[in-house]
Image (cartoon, rainbow, N blue to C red; front, side):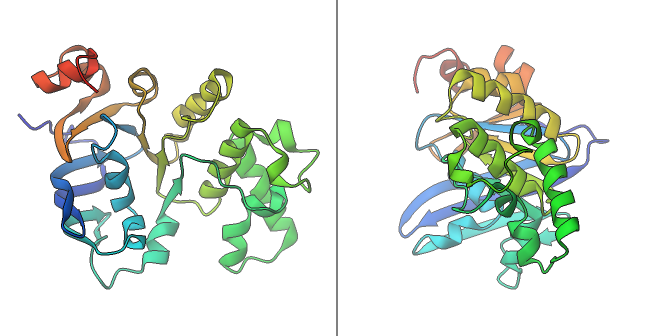
Length: 259
C-alpha cells in the first residue's frame, strides 16, 4: 500500500512516475513520492540505490551529467521541474543544495555567505552584512565566527565549513533545502551540531536529506523513503517505517540483513 500524506499537510515536491537514465543505464525506476512541506524527509538505502540521483533530480543537478535523460514529473508549487523551458538558475534559487563534501569558496567567510545575494545584484554592504549575520545565526555558526568574518573560509574546521555551506545555501531564501550526506565526513560532535541544525531548519524550509546512516535518519527525519535498486520500496512516517515497516525488504535492510 502506498503511503498517503495527511490531507492537511501541504506538499512541497510532487514526484510522479520519475525515471532517470545515464545513457543506456537506468538509475531510477518509476518513482512516485510526495515530499511534505516544512518537514524533514530522509532518503535511505544501500550505496548505489539511487538516493543521491533522486535528490539531484529535484533541482536538475543531473543535467551536468552527459547523456542524461529524465521521464516523469517533478512539481514544485505548480512548476514542472523537468520542463525544457524551466529556468534552471531560478529553480536552483528556490531549491538550495549542500553537498557531501563541504565546498566553501576560497574567499572570506562573509563573502561565502552573501555570494548568492551579490550574484542576484544586491550591493548594499550594510544589507549584506545583516544577511550574513542572520544566515550564520540560522546555521548555528555566528558565535564561532563573528569576530573573524574576514578570515578565509578554508581556515574553518570541517563541521564549521559544512554549516557555512548551509548558511550560504539559505542566504537566497530557498523553499527547499537538499542535503546530500552532509555528515559523512564529520566527527560525532560536528555531526550532532548538524543534526540539531537540520531539526531547527524545518521551521522555515522543506528539508530533504540523503543519509547512509539509519540512526541519523531516525533522529532527524519526520518522513523516510527507502530506495533499493533505483526503485522506491517504501515511504512512511519515520517512526513507523523503522518500527513497523510494510515491506519485508525494508525490514531486512533496517535490521542489517543486507546493505
